[in-house]
Image (cartoon, rainbow, N blue to C red; front, top):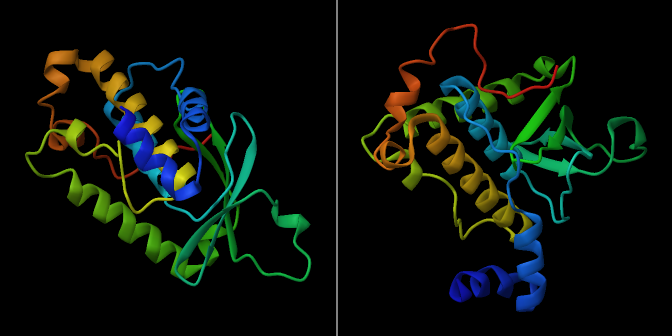
Length: 201
């Protein structure tokens, strides 16, 4: 554990105590067993948010705002109406960090007017589906440690991974979860009217 903490600490210049406090904060609570669609939707939605650019520490049950501009996602503390002379890009959704360390979205009413955003989202969904279709156990795919992410992104991804792992264990049993593959979840998911975005509206 000390080696993993040190890997997380170095990019931000944090000491061990600060990292341990952050890890304690990013502990999943109230994790429940979820059906295949909810599990996959929370996974996809959460990695979409965590893959956006941000440098602050997200806290529970607070509104954050996800924007898309010139092929990049940005998570911001600033709501759409508060921008003045700066264009943050297309407002896509209000994002909330849940106690189980997954993210939920409240989608903007007119986000689909941005065709580039639609295309990017479709590409990410397709890439996500593709990544689920091999024989590698799904717990081995979870984002426990991703070197390319920034400090708070990495903490959030690690907490998400722990949450999803526990949820899967509650759903199918701990032993079975270790060999569960993505196709097992996808086979009971695919209905064309189901979205991979976990929304609160």
